[in-house]
Length: 195
Length: 195
DNA sequence: CGCGCGATTGAGTAATTTCAAATCTAGTGG
DNA sequence: CCACTAGATTTGAAATTACTCAATCGCGCG
Image (cartoon, rainbow over all chains, first blue to last red; front, side, top):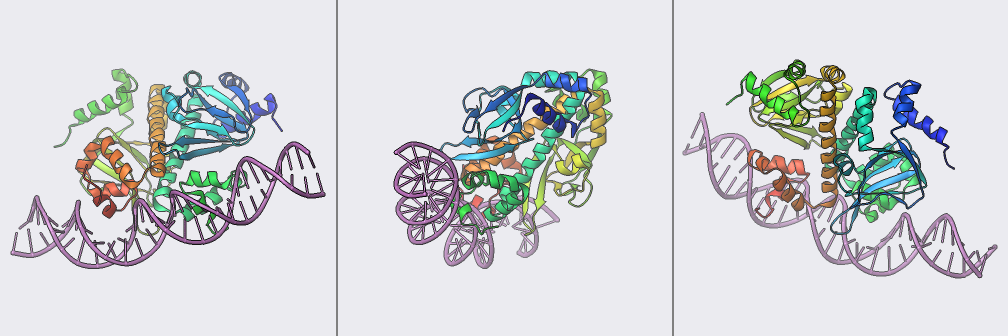
């Protein structure tokens, strides 16, 4: 299954209007700054070492962003399913090459917005600047919580919390990847009591 | 030693103008949304359980924000010295009671801005919205790096990196607090080879 | 001089990782 | 429908990393 252009527009608009109300014209204007892309499972949206000029809003599907360290271990920074945003923020905002990989765990449809388009959009339509501000702030708060979780909770507590927070992901994502997101080995996750 | 009101204004203006240029009038207008506060070592700027309606820009001094977990252990989320911002973001942006404590490690002077004043300021002066956007984005990127560091590096590597990143803090902050920031015990930090 | 805070050291313990092997499962081609 | 394979998960045992608890040390300051 796969969304039509019209379906996609609807979904993007709903996402934005959770935070700011837009007239039809404002939405049309906003929309003109985005493009769309369809990807299959296993395809990459961003590859480390290459430019990563877009932020992505997931309309359908599931992706992950991950970092490959010097020892060859990958660490998952983020999952993104429907209604979530995903990018390599450092590469995106500073126009650098990516240090992260972003790839699809399922067939996926996304909206893309380049940093230049985003800045233009924000300059012209302050509501959208407000929207992105809210998004970024919420993201910042979430990351702070994750840091606290990594520092104060043991592996099992982190997993329990993950399950409560993202029950859907538990269904859709292989356990080994969840382990990597939580910063624990897949064996340790596997040894945990069933919830 | 202690800065005059004029010194403080200068420092705030420099901080802002690293990102956006302001006319004298724009700066005066911006400034009118801030208040100032002077604190002594050990004083609290924010206390868990109470409102935390302000974001703070440090003109002089050193603070930390920390979280007290259920086991009675404190975890340091952030240090903030001159030119840094510090708050309980969740409490600040959502007008909730604080979950963090923020207190002074040295005598300190800060600018305060309430969330309402900030939103008014941003609505009226788009440059300042842009400024806060940049700040928040940079903070987001820094937190992502810290998460990766917590997941991919062992205690000693994290400490080494901390020293390189913040040599000043190593001088000004007791080791036990640095350990708490890095998510390791003070004993473990103490056992590390001298740099 | 002695107190108090910060830092260090030692010994034992707990949590988690690593490596290796076994098991399970779903999808595929014959 | 079944055998087969690749991917995912589980299990065991040893090794590592860091923690905890307890004691000691060092030093600046009243």
